[in-house]
Length: 264
Ligand SMILES: Cc1cc2nc3c(=O)[nH]c(=O)nc-3n(C[C@H](O)[C@H](O)[C@H](O)COP(=O)(O)OP(=O)(O)OC[C@H]3O[C@@H](n4cnc5c(N)ncnc54)[C@H](O)[C@@H]3O)c2cc1C
Image 1 (tube, helix red, strand yellow):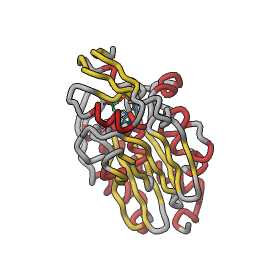
Image 2 (cartoon, rainbow, N blue to C red):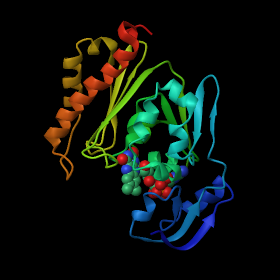
Image 3 (cartoon, rainbow, N blue to C red):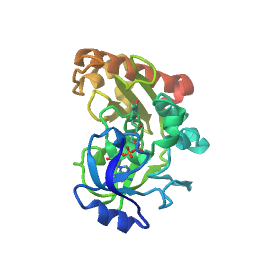
């Protein structure tokens, strides 16, 4: 349950930012994660009236407001056409439809959770976060930044020609993933993200020739990440699953594009 002394609907990003500078205050988005924290907050800052719940698009990019809920992204035709359904695949296992109707992209990315399907998917694309004070930062840099009191305004996905696919492995449906894997194949590079190791997702980028021997690429790439053990899986099991997922995820793209996989 969310416990606080005061609850304020911010009327501007500046007001939300100013309020958020106090240590005991906090931004609330979908309240999916925040409500699990056992803490008495000073002021909870609600940003739901700041019109951050829109997805816009032009020839160069998608711009997704921080308050867009996961199910709006899951069902966004153009975003799914661009990602060949990979975005939908990354979100559809997260708890259930009602949950995804409430929780937001901003909360999911700002949280930089070690189990995040959402971060694993977005980090592999040419994507950026727009921070109110910090400006526009590449997603892979943002993932490594320390937590601060800035406000995430939107997520930008550049429409770089990419072939994308996503896979995750769960012990049980709707549980947190044991390992997540997203692959993006561009003109001459392949980028693979592995998340839920159980550390936050990170990427490896190689020349496209690296994956001509897919078995070898999957093994080497899986081995280049660090893994840890927790109640869901051991580090060694995760490393093995990552290797399998990398191979399968590249194969998903191969099935779709055949020999053209490398010839965009
Ligand atoms: C039971 C459970 C299971 C889950 N399973 C999965 C899963 O399998 N895969 C997966 O990827 N995710 C999973 N999640 C995470 C979920 O998808 C959301 O990422 C999470 O609930 C946070 O989104 P929210 O909108 O609820 O944010 P909130 O809970 O409201 O906020 C989360 C944090 O982000 C901060 N914040 C939110 N928005 C902003 C903003 N715009 N600017 C600055 N700070 C902000 C808040 O202050 C807070 O610290 C799970 C969550 C729960 C509770």
